[in-house]
Length: 79
Image (cartoon, rainbow, N blue to C red; front, side, top):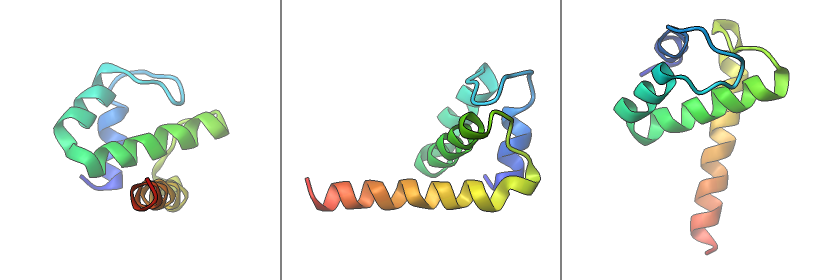
């Protein structure tokens, strides 16, 4: 699932920024680890900015996702 599809899917129902609604849960359950990390990044981004992520925020959300991945890899390398 790409960023555009993710934003559309998680916003099929009304929600507050950072809110976890049934559509968000459905996306996470169906998408696997990569989608889960992207959702986590998007929701974290929204909480920090107090607004929902949109299509124009893709670069910032993907950068945050990349940082999550780097942090996970570093933690795995140094248990």
